[in-house]
Image (tube, rainbow, N blue to C red; front, top):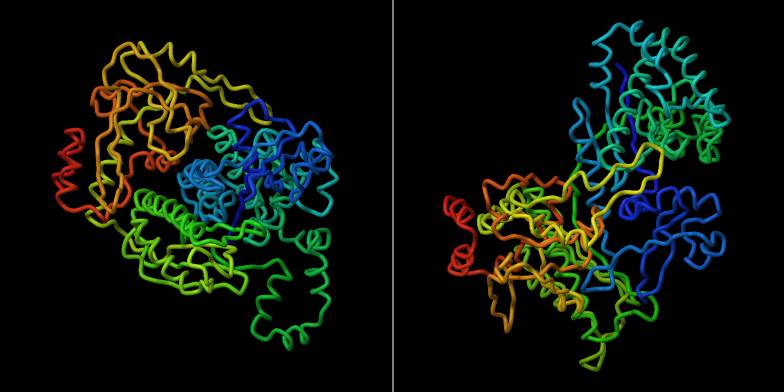
Length: 590
């Protein structure tokens, strides 16, 4: 049977992530903007359809957007605490939630196209569904319950963009009754549309995120119609309508005109690509869906435009250090989640004279090694006569890791096991404390306030919402102290510090709840509760439950010590001796 391919695309994804954090913004004109290098609001990154109706467009400044839509709500992308650089972790975590759902679909090949897009080869799933009933039974059931089974499906036939809701439904029923009865490929597309409706509904129910989809016989066709009826709708494109849809879409200046060029001329001008071009012109593409969820590389980059160019040695060293620390953290998190290790490190920078890059073996994830590699490379291009100056000034610094191999080194495994154990012991807030959004409707979610949470501290088990970690920010250095019922230690963390190149690991107790917003607060607003040390490794805790994979990375950053490869064997032993007994037993067996 012919392939059935779908593209699922999250609608205004960054905006939806922010709306879930602030439910009062559902259904309102809002946009997501990013802080520029100078610390002021930059251009719009994501815009809701309510805002687009007022004329707000991507690329506008906040000032321009507010001028066309005074009621526009602006949500800023958070910055990493140690640098003026966007922290996209909340959007990545939300994306992980969506892909967790997609990976659990049976008989489907999944290819991650971006943080908010995925191609699905649903051919096998369609075949299984078609074998469960006769074609006649499927068609009769689809026609009788079309409004329920295809609530947001359109058929791209060149006239579909003009249809009202009742006309859309009548068109589907007519297509089922006429085309699907006569052609098995059309029926397969109908079954595929039904399956994608179910998947999109599941994504919404579990995450509150809406998405659109395109369904066709290949990736190009699915991509072509995916955005045709955005937001929160999907489009099928039967093969007989491909040429007509080509003519009526913005790409007609290329595709429709290309069809008018004689084949002999195409063969002469593009001898190697001619076969591919002929197929694309007809809407045919045999590119397979390649199972891919993991990134092929990990990267971090920072631009320094205009007056923000780096002109001093101190400035370059500061940013190299900050970027390397964040990059090292991401590498360790990827190692824990994906159980793989990068082998190559590519370091690069751009100045007023050009772009320079170098690839070296990545022998260690320790940030001091990354710092030394990058600074050593960059210093050879510093032409400043003053030893404190840097010339030509730096416009960009970036680094990336690639060539991953499966597995984790034994030294890192001890810490990985400890972190895995800690995740399993963590607790999540009561699910009853948030109310899911109804499909296509705004919602006001019930969130636990700080005052309400403090009243719950008389419970014998405390809800783990956040585990404090040391930070260089002033806010974290002076956390809000909370009066407890007793002076007993309520939690601890293993902290690494490095002074004069001497790495130390210590068990640091804490007696307060750090109230700085973090990844958990993105989902549960201001739930602020204390951590009871006994709940972190109690086998009998009745409120204990697994943390979803999408939240593992956020939690892991709280537990993962830095500079692991700098540890001596005795230091590892001393550190493990400070861990809970059950974790020590697991580590001892490795």
